[in-house]
Image 1 (tube, helix red, strand yellow):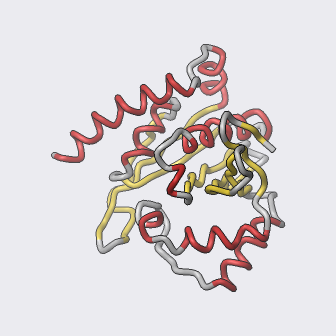
Image 2: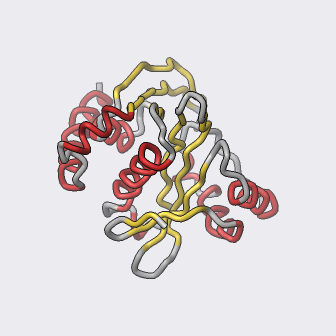
Image 3: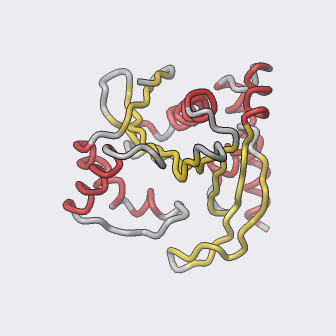
Length: 206
Protein backbone atom coordinates (compact mmCIF):
# COMPACT_ATOMS: atom_id res chain seq x y z
CA UNK A 1 0.00 0.00 0.00
CA UNK A 2 1.22 3.49 -0.91
CA UNK A 3 -0.42 6.05 1.35
CA UNK A 4 -1.27 9.69 0.80
CA UNK A 5 -3.24 12.12 2.97
CA UNK A 6 -6.76 10.88 2.21
CA UNK A 7 -6.13 8.06 -0.29
CA UNK A 8 -3.85 5.11 -0.85
CA UNK A 9 -2.77 3.07 -3.85
CA UNK A 10 -2.79 -0.72 -4.03
CA UNK A 11 -2.35 -3.10 -6.91
CA UNK A 12 -5.51 -3.71 -8.95
CA UNK A 13 -7.34 -6.93 -8.02
CA UNK A 14 -9.37 -9.15 -10.32
CA UNK A 15 -12.51 -8.36 -8.31
CA UNK A 16 -12.12 -4.65 -9.09
CA UNK A 17 -13.80 -5.27 -12.46
CA UNK A 18 -17.15 -4.40 -10.90
CA UNK A 19 -16.16 -0.74 -10.61
CA UNK A 20 -13.85 -0.47 -13.61
CA UNK A 21 -16.72 -1.83 -15.72
CA UNK A 22 -18.86 1.15 -14.72
CA UNK A 23 -16.08 3.64 -15.37
CA UNK A 24 -15.07 2.15 -18.71
CA UNK A 25 -18.71 2.50 -19.75
CA UNK A 26 -18.95 6.10 -18.57
CA UNK A 27 -18.74 8.24 -21.71
CA UNK A 28 -18.08 11.41 -19.69
CA UNK A 29 -14.92 9.80 -18.29
CA UNK A 30 -13.77 8.24 -21.54
CA UNK A 31 -14.37 11.15 -23.90
CA UNK A 32 -11.18 13.00 -22.91
CA UNK A 33 -8.79 10.04 -22.87
CA UNK A 34 -6.36 9.46 -25.73
CA UNK A 35 -7.73 5.97 -26.37
CA UNK A 36 -10.89 5.01 -28.25
CA UNK A 37 -14.26 4.84 -26.52
CA UNK A 38 -15.02 1.13 -26.19
CA UNK A 39 -18.03 -0.14 -24.25
CA UNK A 40 -16.86 -3.47 -22.78
CA UNK A 41 -19.18 -6.27 -21.72
CA UNK A 42 -18.98 -7.62 -18.18
CA UNK A 43 -17.10 -10.70 -19.40
CA UNK A 44 -14.57 -8.61 -21.30
CA UNK A 45 -14.09 -6.38 -18.26
CA UNK A 46 -13.54 -9.40 -16.00
CA UNK A 47 -10.81 -10.67 -18.33
CA UNK A 48 -9.26 -7.20 -18.54
CA UNK A 49 -9.10 -6.79 -14.75
CA UNK A 50 -7.72 -10.31 -14.31
CA UNK A 51 -4.98 -9.66 -16.88
CA UNK A 52 -3.95 -6.40 -15.15
CA UNK A 53 -4.02 -8.00 -11.70
CA UNK A 54 -1.82 -10.94 -12.71
CA UNK A 55 0.78 -9.25 -14.89
CA UNK A 56 3.05 -6.39 -13.78
CA UNK A 57 6.25 -6.84 -15.76
CA UNK A 58 5.54 -4.27 -18.47
CA UNK A 59 2.64 -2.38 -16.91
CA UNK A 60 1.27 -1.74 -13.43
CA UNK A 61 -2.33 -0.90 -12.62
CA UNK A 62 -3.18 0.74 -9.31
CA UNK A 63 -6.51 0.94 -7.51
CA UNK A 64 -7.01 4.35 -5.88
CA UNK A 65 -8.81 3.90 -2.55
CA UNK A 66 -10.18 6.19 0.15
CA UNK A 67 -8.51 5.93 3.54
CA UNK A 68 -11.85 6.65 5.20
CA UNK A 69 -13.69 3.54 4.01
CA UNK A 70 -11.25 1.52 1.84
CA UNK A 71 -13.57 1.99 -1.14
CA UNK A 72 -11.96 2.08 -4.57
CA UNK A 73 -12.58 5.51 -6.10
CA UNK A 74 -10.49 5.25 -9.24
CA UNK A 75 -7.48 3.67 -10.93
CA UNK A 76 -4.21 4.61 -12.60
CA UNK A 77 -1.44 2.92 -14.54
CA UNK A 78 2.18 2.93 -15.60
CA UNK A 79 2.57 1.33 -19.05
CA UNK A 80 5.28 0.33 -21.50
CA UNK A 81 7.75 -0.20 -18.66
CA UNK A 82 11.22 -0.73 -20.13
CA UNK A 83 13.66 -1.80 -17.43
CA UNK A 84 16.62 -1.70 -19.83
CA UNK A 85 16.13 1.95 -20.79
CA UNK A 86 14.48 2.78 -17.44
CA UNK A 87 11.49 4.42 -19.07
CA UNK A 88 7.72 4.12 -18.91
CA UNK A 89 4.52 5.82 -19.98
CA UNK A 90 2.10 7.30 -17.46
CA UNK A 91 -1.26 5.94 -18.59
CA UNK A 92 -3.18 8.56 -16.66
CA UNK A 93 -5.55 8.66 -13.71
CA UNK A 94 -9.29 8.01 -13.56
CA UNK A 95 -11.27 9.21 -10.55
CA UNK A 96 -14.46 7.27 -11.20
CA UNK A 97 -16.32 8.11 -8.00
CA UNK A 98 -17.95 11.50 -8.58
CA UNK A 99 -17.88 12.31 -4.86
CA UNK A 100 -14.08 12.62 -5.06
CA UNK A 101 -13.66 14.57 -8.29
CA UNK A 102 -13.72 18.02 -6.72
CA UNK A 103 -11.05 17.31 -4.09
CA UNK A 104 -7.31 16.71 -4.14
CA UNK A 105 -7.49 12.95 -4.69
CA UNK A 106 -6.42 13.24 -8.33
CA UNK A 107 -3.37 15.28 -7.37
CA UNK A 108 -2.50 13.04 -4.43
CA UNK A 109 -2.60 10.00 -6.71
CA UNK A 110 -0.35 11.80 -9.19
CA UNK A 111 2.27 12.54 -6.55
CA UNK A 112 2.18 8.97 -5.24
CA UNK A 113 2.68 7.61 -8.76
CA UNK A 114 5.65 9.92 -9.37
CA UNK A 115 7.24 8.65 -6.17
CA UNK A 116 6.58 5.04 -7.16
CA UNK A 117 7.95 5.47 -10.69
CA UNK A 118 11.18 7.24 -9.75
CA UNK A 119 11.95 5.85 -6.31
CA UNK A 120 10.61 2.30 -6.46
CA UNK A 121 10.73 1.33 -10.13
CA UNK A 122 13.98 3.29 -10.59
CA UNK A 123 12.63 4.89 -13.76
CA UNK A 124 14.78 7.58 -15.39
CA UNK A 125 12.30 8.93 -17.96
CA UNK A 126 8.53 9.16 -17.46
CA UNK A 127 6.37 10.22 -20.38
CA UNK A 128 2.72 11.12 -20.73
CA UNK A 129 0.25 12.60 -23.19
CA UNK A 130 -3.20 14.15 -23.34
CA UNK A 131 -5.68 15.74 -25.71
CA UNK A 132 -5.17 19.44 -26.37
CA UNK A 133 -8.58 20.14 -24.78
CA UNK A 134 -7.85 18.19 -21.58
CA UNK A 135 -7.61 21.19 -19.28
CA UNK A 136 -6.73 19.33 -16.06
CA UNK A 137 -3.88 17.24 -17.46
CA UNK A 138 -2.42 20.09 -19.51
CA UNK A 139 -2.48 22.25 -16.38
CA UNK A 140 -1.05 19.58 -14.12
CA UNK A 141 1.84 18.35 -16.27
CA UNK A 142 3.87 21.58 -16.17
CA UNK A 143 2.82 22.06 -12.53
CA UNK A 144 4.61 18.75 -11.85
CA UNK A 145 7.62 20.02 -13.88
CA UNK A 146 7.03 17.86 -16.95
CA UNK A 147 8.48 19.34 -20.14
CA UNK A 148 6.25 19.55 -23.20
CA UNK A 149 8.20 17.76 -25.94
CA UNK A 150 5.87 18.30 -28.85
CA UNK A 151 2.41 18.08 -30.33
CA UNK A 152 1.02 15.23 -32.38
CA UNK A 153 -1.03 17.16 -34.91
CA UNK A 154 -4.49 15.68 -35.51
CA UNK A 155 -3.31 12.51 -33.82
CA UNK A 156 -6.56 11.42 -32.15
CA UNK A 157 -9.99 10.98 -33.71
CA UNK A 158 -12.91 10.46 -31.32
CA UNK A 159 -16.24 12.00 -30.32
CA UNK A 160 -16.66 12.91 -33.98
CA UNK A 161 -13.71 15.31 -33.73
CA UNK A 162 -10.01 15.41 -34.54
CA UNK A 163 -7.69 16.31 -31.67
CA UNK A 164 -4.06 17.32 -31.29
CA UNK A 165 -2.14 15.25 -28.73
CA UNK A 166 0.33 16.92 -26.35
CA UNK A 167 3.43 14.95 -25.29
CA UNK A 168 5.36 15.43 -22.05
CA UNK A 169 8.33 13.96 -20.18
CA UNK A 170 9.92 14.19 -16.75
CA UNK A 171 13.41 12.92 -15.91
CA UNK A 172 14.47 11.40 -12.62
CA UNK A 173 17.07 14.12 -11.95
CA UNK A 174 14.44 16.81 -12.54
CA UNK A 175 11.95 15.14 -10.24
CA UNK A 176 14.48 14.65 -7.45
CA UNK A 177 15.81 18.20 -7.76
CA UNK A 178 12.33 19.68 -7.32
CA UNK A 179 11.53 17.16 -4.59
CA UNK A 180 14.58 18.30 -2.59
CA UNK A 181 13.51 21.91 -3.07
CA UNK A 182 10.10 21.08 -1.61
CA UNK A 183 8.26 21.94 -4.82
CA UNK A 184 5.88 18.97 -4.67
CA UNK A 185 3.75 20.11 -1.74
CA UNK A 186 0.02 19.75 -2.45
CA UNK A 187 -0.70 23.45 -1.95
CA UNK A 188 2.19 24.56 -4.14
CA UNK A 189 1.26 22.23 -7.00
CA UNK A 190 -2.39 23.29 -6.76
CA UNK A 191 -1.44 26.96 -7.07
CA UNK A 192 0.57 26.20 -10.21
CA UNK A 193 -2.31 24.16 -11.67
CA UNK A 194 -4.78 27.00 -11.16
CA UNK A 195 -2.39 29.50 -12.77
CA UNK A 196 -1.73 27.19 -15.73
CA UNK A 197 -5.44 26.50 -16.24
CA UNK A 198 -6.18 30.21 -16.62
CA UNK A 199 -3.58 30.49 -19.38
CA UNK A 200 -4.79 27.36 -21.19
CA UNK A 201 -8.46 28.42 -20.99
CA UNK A 202 -7.59 31.65 -22.80
CA UNK A 203 -5.60 29.69 -25.38
CA UNK A 204 -8.46 27.28 -26.07
CA UNK A 205 -10.91 30.14 -26.60
CA UNK A 206 -8.86 31.57 -29.48
